[in-house]
Length: 496
Image (cartoon, helix red, strand yellow):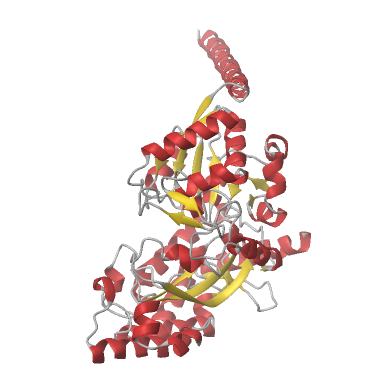
């Protein structure tokens, strides 16, 4: 009897395996069929809050893409929380395209966990125009273990960081133009500016605009772009990486770098002297308005940042531009491996990136209703905030009309900057960390415990705090992580 049961079990097992192969083959055939000339609708998990008046714009977009490539899109806006999208991706939920990057729905993790389709071989065949349009270094920076799992947004891919200021308050009111122009990479160079702005506020009794409480206001994450100057190897929150400009590919601990520690001490000075908002370590949401601020951008981006605000913005370069894997992976759109419309999704991304009329509609809304092109070749908004979808997350910048008052040649100039920018020596490197998950989790816990305090300056003693962090990191296995990353970096550089 036992032998009969074993035989029966074996037969059933073979039957199950055979049915699995049939199912897989059927799915492959179904995918191929759906990607032909029939009209299809794609589900796109698009970054950002849902626009206030989306229906008319989406209808126009779908009219355009339907006529051009027989494709319509169901836009699903993901807001600032990526947990819903991560769950959909990890459980095989329904989507065709999804915004993903180094900081949202973790592109590298999703790729390594087979939550995104491998596009490497398909891109040159299905979307040859897109393949040629996006530079090779951007494609290289998109690779995970040698494969491409998402289309990078071709924009300010060589990242540059800028200091920003409310012109009317800082330059015109506080008369701090000289101090603003003297700002640079080190945070200490910004201290005289913040001090002058605070003095103007205190002596003139002129309130900070929009109920702000200090010259510089930020949430618990601290100052935007604080890891400028580091290639963080796809592990942004572990505070390690290769220091740009060090003429080395040595993996270093930021908490042992003198320049980084000096920045942390400057943050404490700002906090103690009222130059930043008190209680920043407990603020969740980023501030919409600023007196002095910072952001990743380019010459002319100030016009975009000022869009919808009641003040002008001036900028001064802090760092860059430079290509890193993180900067290239700062905005991408991947495709579900379970989609029955993979080829069409690729074709749609090609269309969105390279068709000028569609690209501008996608960014600005309906031409003649939401925006217009003036005689200088600039886009002018006609409706204040009916359609503001987060254009940086969608497709290439280089088919867009710049928003007035940005110069008409702004994106042409930005493209030239990209073409001539320096690159990190390890662009395209993605670490394999499957054997380090225990140590990474432990070290992340150590950093998370102090992060929001030390990054906002809300600590009693920076040196003592850093010393404790480093001791706890050592116990948690930081040295093992660093050694393994160095081994991988050395192998990557040698193979280039």
